[in-house]
Length: 482
Ligand code: FRU
Image (tube, rainbow, N blue to C red; front, side, top):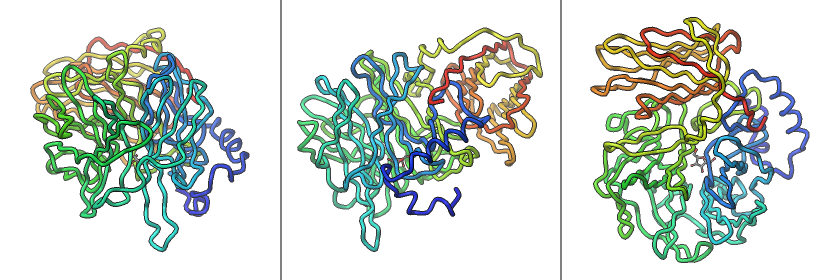
């Protein structure tokens, strides 16, 4: 981050006070980038983080993302609105929800959406720093209605006007759900004793009367010092809770990224007591380098869908200097099998697949490619994507059953992420490669590894050892937000 430029004064500046030329200049600069993406949701300019308001409304899919359009930095956040007919091709509606009032003065933070009659109701956290000596963070939970022309009208008063007793200003990211006679909001929180919690509120009316209900009983207490972005999903007769327990004890729940994304599978959810019934252990949703703030959609067609930020909080990326950062994963379909999540890209993504390419070791790899392979059993296996000063290597060790992903971004030291596959071995893998991001679906989506990969942009090549049925297809470049 260029701290000389990004003073508090610029980070806090309201959108209406920015000179529009800043955006046109940024756009111009970004057109020269070699790192832009072909089929992942990326920003037009500036930074993207969490997915928000994922919904199906008025015969279209809606997905918003947390954005700061004026640079590759976490400034004042807004919601950028994308729509799609097929979960693959996304258009920017150009009607963002921006901070413009006392109860979201320092950012329209994360939230969700629900259909109510013929409108979409949005619920989000208004982040406000009070204007006192302590600069206390004051969280409001706010509502807004969106009509069929995608016009958003914020409610004038907050739905919840502060954190409850015993909770600090870190209280945010409501997921809204309907069950029986009530609307429920599930929120991430931090106690004054510095512990992460998930709290629930409820109301019979979506736009008023919200009251604290209960603390969620997860059957786990390793929630770190702050739990962000909790989401409940329902599929295959089971329940999954996905959340980001910042600071969770990594001797009890293993993760390597600065902040983890976790899930727990349960047999059922007791709405009366806000309790997960027979909860599993905590697992990572994804075991790659950059993956955070998953948002779930219990879709009207019965599928459980997810979208996730390919990025991490408190982390700088090489593209920041070009004035942009962050992307969203392809939309995934989730299932639960044998107590674990299975993730695959939604079938609609097949429309991205173009012609197959003749494969040979050392072949040139297109910036948008799908690489699929099986694995020769009983051997060490590996796949390597390489350009001059950077590489991405996936390797399986037949003796330890460890699958290791090594990344060397241009100009940086190599780093690893490892999965112990155990008795399930390494069977197959699909790598969705999109220039500077990748998503790897291992063993039919039983495990996934997602991340960024900043390479030199020249001479991308593909090599492998002891892999079977190697297939490479070009993927469409549909240039979302180009
Ligand atoms: C997670 C998060 C949320 C917050 C949002 C702000 O990445 O910190 O808790 O609402 O980002 O952009």
